[in-house]
Image 1: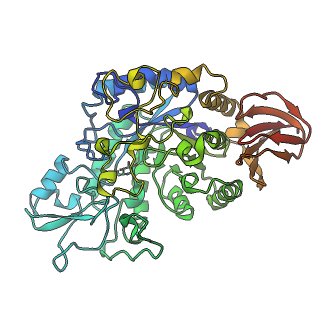
Image 2: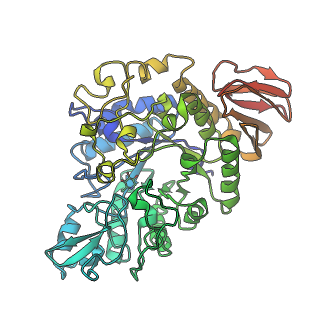
Image 3: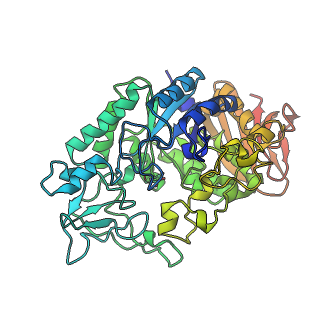
Length: 522
Ligand code: NOJ
């Protein structure tokens, strides 16, 4: 049997911004429950929920204070169960975000751990003595400043890869592993179909506490958090065993998936298959130059690096990175949609990208993101990509009847689900047609690649399965380009949505910014 996640398209929901149901301006689970039909209508197969656990929200849920509950902001466990039940009834899988690397500093485990050096939970976190009047190492927090915070009460430093409010757990401690396994089982028993594991490359640090070396490529234009290479703080060999422990938990259940967040070079990303992760996120479309030549080389390199049996995956955007429409512009955002949904491997979509939503400018007074607050001015703020989903043209876009926690896109009266749903030429219609085409066309989901290449600035690749053969041709330029094909056939879909079923004889003229899926005669 082919595992469901090989054919699936995953849709990331950022719960704070999807649908508010109780007029507090923040999205919640009962709100999401109302919108599940939309996801089924759109045609995705699985939703991944960013964290909904109890949290002081220093990092909007990525600071967990209880791994087996739901924050009151989002609802309660009964609401969660309703979401899972309805999603399943609609044929949608549910993937939970799981944050194994760190807890909140308000987690009772950390409260115990910091209470005294002799506390049995002291070793659940990374406590070390300082060195010559300063922190134990030069390690930097991803969110700015030293990764060590001094705790005067017990006279030691604790390590945090992110905020001081997010102390790192000690994954060398078997009790920590057992506690996290139990938390995973809690959700697996409730029926979740898998986990997206947060920042797994950070799970374990060098036990000898060696200083990180300088990053030779750093310039003052780069964020100070990039000054050092993460040689001794990420991607350490012991991570493998820890992750395989998580895999052995999910393997006790049928049909569950483990997805890992891996911001690493591709040759390192692919090693995480060997650590038990089904889908180590491939984020390499996010930083890539938007050119046919570069993307063709990326696809080929990734395919060459994949170990035997490993299933690829692709991501265009998420709650941490600038939106695709902001990066490549509205015309090429349609090309990006066609690319994501025709590549070999499981695609992950980010809510709102199906509307062509762009980054929303945030007034300095409304900034929420701790990253932006700590390391301002480097374009790192994540609020612009976390704005409320615009459902209709009403005040607050149908997201909430109160002022939302972040502003909506200023064009929400035009750019919203209700308007785009009824527009036969909209990007939303394109996404829906692409999802339907992919779902009924095995060549596009599980098929192999044929030729992968580029002609001028047109990216071209073949997908084949049994007797069916498709060519995807994506014009990544703003000029018309005619491409020649190995055979004749018909147009299955154009990003311009106006030439379906058109037949062609060996040549196809692509308009500016046009992509096509072509069914070739075999
Ligand atoms: C990665 C998450 O995607 C991001 O939002 C978060 O701030 C960090 N990990 C820390 O958990």
